[in-house]
Picture 1 (tube, rainbow over the protein chains, first blue to last red):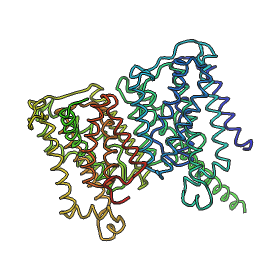
Picture 2 (picture 1 turned 45 degrees about the vertical axis):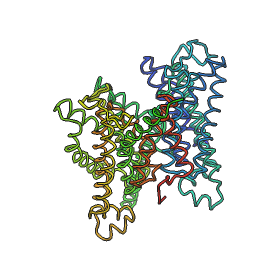
Picture 3 (picture 1 turned 135 degrees about the horizontal axis):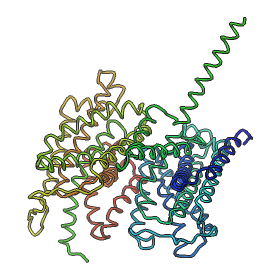
Picture 4 (picture 1 turned 180 degrees about the horizontal axis):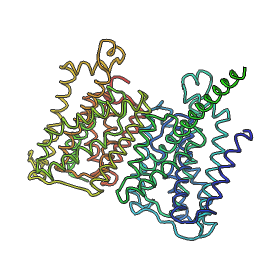
Length: 332
Length: 290
């Protein structure tokens, strides 16, 4: 990685970190924290779906595992929340690796992989909803005990900075993946798995590393969700809404790019809030916007918002070089 | 332990629920077999049809079974239009895109229904909702017996359409070899849209059969769509008899799991079967082609 790779990430992180000094209203901070948590999970999805081309429709399985492991470790075993965070990531990676091992070894790809991940997430949801250990249908309430050691903060801004730090960390991780040999192999598998294999890429190993990494990052976002809202149940943690959210953000923002998931999450939730402001109390109005934006993005903006911007920039550059040529011709 | 009669009754009830699953899966498998796409909007379209049945009953006082007559052509037109003017053009012929476009459509449809009808659960009651038919010592629910019969008839009709009509021939030609079909003058986008329309028409029938004993709310489609995927995968993607048999089988499995494991865990059997089939034999139990 070079300085050119790091500077945009650093600049954006610093700018975002300054935000709580300007904005103090708590609904806005809530919005930002929630959107960043979604962005973090979406970054996890993007590692597997964006770079690896394996579209998962069931990332709720990892998000929910992160949330439940954090909550259960604290409630039932009195484990410290920070340790719980690390264990949640490990559990997310383990669940992801197992699902990946079973599905990739059977050669599932494309729509079949999407369906099998969806089914795994549903199994988790039903189990979590039905067993007493996970709190059943009543869900789990994490005890309110505000202390930095418990990963609970009196000031929303501190939690915001924490999530932002994780998002920045994953931005760096994603940039590293993009520049690394592993990333190149992952993209090769996405573009043409058979060709990649022929060149000696161990595609199963590459995909398993990607899904484990992806699961760990998404579990981290689930853990942060649980710590911020202090309540989870099966429909929140393992529900299909989160699977859809985590896949929408990268696709809208720019699939397989470093900033895509974050841009997508901010755009979607920004639009959703706007729709709510305008339409008032109509239920589901923000989701109507999400679905519409998804269809429009697929129809007109393959590569998402970042892809669109890039095309605009290229066109702008094309015009400038043409302009420069004309000038030089005129000069002659 | 349970007496054999209870188990037999549960199995038969499951068989009859399975008939409706089969109808839903029939539409899905037809669309998959021809367009080679997974239609994520299937559940939301079913919800639309169920609301249509409910509205016809609540506002116009129509009998749910009678609603089949206007609803089948309506759903056909809706499906035709969606494929022709939204899904087809928006997805540029890429599988991943179709998955996403139909997902987007399902989110929009579900939430438009939510905005219009709110999240309340609605039921309709008819004189025959709770009638039973005695078969020897067994008591069977009357609407479910009707459901089973209609499902078998619709599968037969669909089979006739596909095998005995020119449109059916064109559909099969496109399913087998899109380019070749195009070369001999078949209008492929039209055939795609007709197939999608037929798939939606099956949903109209399923909705009318469900409503007398079931309920509807804007989120109900999700519960059926995964079951329908399971049936389709189990029966072999694109196979009509597979969908019928798969649907009946899944209905029985769900009913027996519900009896043995309790209601909250009842559906888990379905998903485990689904995962197992996908992992072990993705071509399905009755599927010929991959």
